[in-house]
Image (cartoon, rainbow, N blue to C red; front, side, top):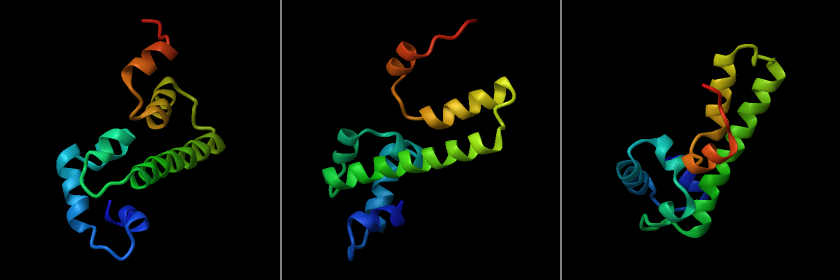
Length: 104
């Protein structure tokens, strides 16, 4: 978290800010799953900082999804489920319910 924050707040001590964000959201995953407005509620997080953190999450997700596709490991329902969870992590449940229909 600290490293990511140094890119949007250079030459500033961001350790306390990183700790505050982890404390507010619970874990690092929840920080990256938060939307722009939730992130901006943290003091010292600007619109630019919030958008950078969201970009970083999407960039890493894209990289990981490309790696999965190249390795052709989507060979079982469990692997497909893990892949979808990784690329859709943080999306609102409403969006997921409206776009994914599963048979039970």
